[in-house]
Image (cartoon, rainbow, N blue to C red; front, side):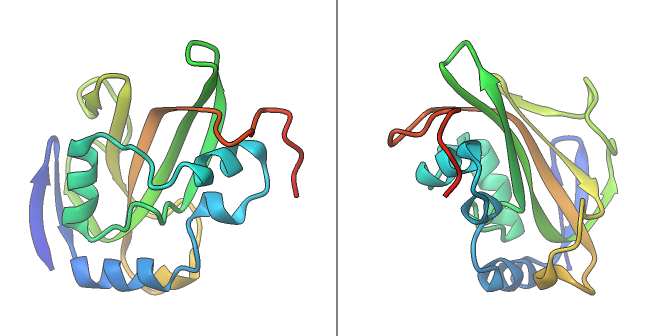
Amino acid sequence: MLSLTFGHWRVTFDREATRRAHTAMPAGGADRCRCADCKNFAAQKPVAYPIDFLDVLARLGIEPTREIEVCGVPDEDSNGVKYYGWFYFVGTVVSGPGSPSPWGREITGDFIWYLENGPAFAVEQFNGLPVSQVLFFNLRLKWARGYSVSTPPV
């Protein structure tokens, strides 16, 4: 296990175990969903996350196209969708805030991310491993490739 500090958090993690689990996943969460929000997210991969967030994912061994889950809400300001979601990594958040709070977030513009222990739900490739999460909020994407809130599932 390696140890690093990210903003307010100190984590121990296994980069190679995280890479293996992400590589074994057939696809990211948005790629497996049929709703318009997820189809829009998947169509824009690789998603343009802030550089500092991509650095966190890379250091932990997380493949940025293998999100565990994303959810979208209409974003009237951008005529698109505001996404939140999470990634898993093999490891533990040793110290730092356990949930979003004004002093426990890393913010780039509107984009917010934070770390917390435990998985939101089971994912086969991470079974039996100590799992923690990198969560994000306020990722704004416009509608792409003809998708819209009224796009029917296929």
